[in-house]
Image (cartoon, rainbow over all chains, first blue to last red; front, side, top):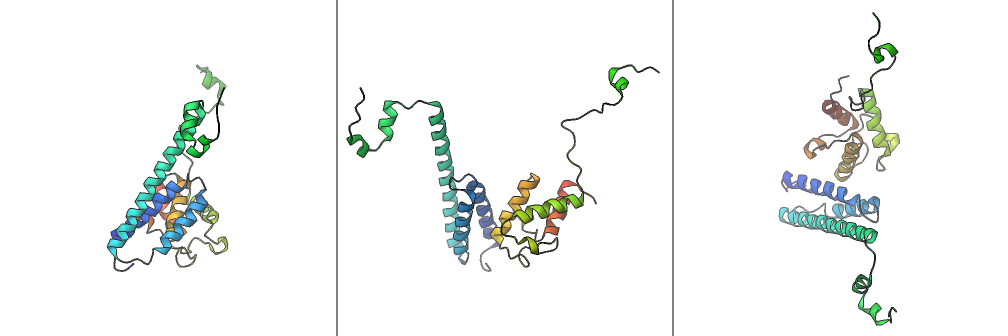
Length: 107
Length: 107
């Protein structure tokens, strides 16, 4: 990367490091996440235009936020499953509408 | 003079400090630990690994592998290495020297 400023390069490296830290808890495994992350970064490694690099960095930061949301949702579901009994209201709320068409009358 | 308290009477019990100083580290021990971490890293060929081998030139690692490698070293030694220091560490020798500076090992 000869033309982009060195701060952008260090931002990209910091982004890669953050994504690796986030990937440690990924449900499909760290190796799966790391291989796919590396291939995406390598695919975009030829980009030289600073504005385009900033757009790609923005995309990476969006992925970090998505992963955070995924982990928070996973924790919420795990705790809910552990500490709360499933009752009629939650089962009917969480099953899809196609399931509701089947008769599920409880006596 | 007769012993005045139980500890001096027993004479053999050495005081054990649970929160005392860490392990005494020597440069040799650091070499071994760093080489072990690097050998366990799957992108490095253990046959080509020596203390002087350069990550980029001799071992064929790119900058993204380098980030992951530094993360592995951080995990082994329990402290974070900032990115600007990390990019100067180009061989195992550099890493050992950096750790000696940070951990006050003077061999």
